[in-house]
Amino acid sequence: MIPKLVIANWKMAIDRASVSQFLNEWEASHIPSDVTALIAPPALFLSDIKDITGAALCAQDVSAHELGAHTGEISAQMLSEFNCSHGLVGHSERRLAWNESNALVAAKARRLEASGICPVICVGESKDVRDSGDAESVVAKQVLASAEGLVSAPVIAYEPIWAIGSGEAATPKIADSMHAAIKAALSARFDEPTSVLYGGSVNEANAGDFLACESIDGLLVGGASLKAASFTNICQSVGDRR
Ligand code: 13P
Image (cartoon, rainbow, N blue to C red; front, side, top):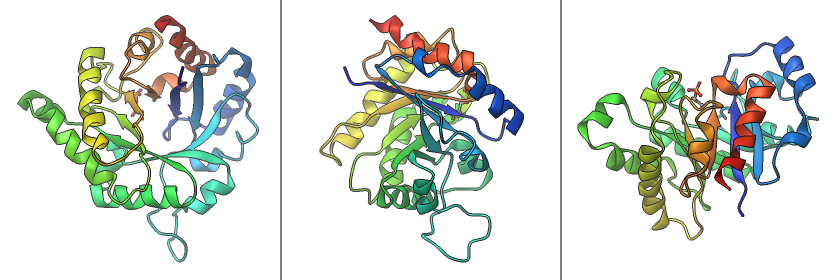
């Protein structure tokens, strides 16, 4: 069975004392063998969690530049020196607040790939697009443009914007259908199958329903990943699919 990928995206919602508390409460042995758990901390805290067992490290973002005079930026090479196996790009919070285009997201994804880090490209539609009935074609286009120039299939995280932090998760049916559309769009572009994660108001109560869907290869979890017990329970809900 291919392990499900479950990523904790801590965003900028945690301080150093809470990171320590998370580590004290984290029991690596409680993560099922058919789950690959990843933690995406603020970059400043990568060194605090670098020795964690039972979870790999994921970056929250990366510079589109390789190296040089780019104040405040963090390169893919630096992230690889901190053993990040994966890196998020194109989170809707960045697309919206920093006007990140698909072209910029693709440039960042290529930087990660060139440094041996697997890009996790975030995509998702607004409420207006969902209501218009065009969500799947809009997201399929976003996926293809954001994966432009990659050699290997990235991981995709489908995060409908209306579901992020709203307490209103998509239904597994909506996610299942979108994931099939994303996989179909990328099958023409890459030889290998693409993993597609779901994100948006995932919690301990609904994680098992998502993980039970064949087309959902894992989860990207925000608020419910900040506490070790809650994130562990989400990882353990993979058992609900057996
Ligand atoms: P929430 O789980 O807090 O809705 O956040 C989802 C998200 O944006 C993860 O990247």
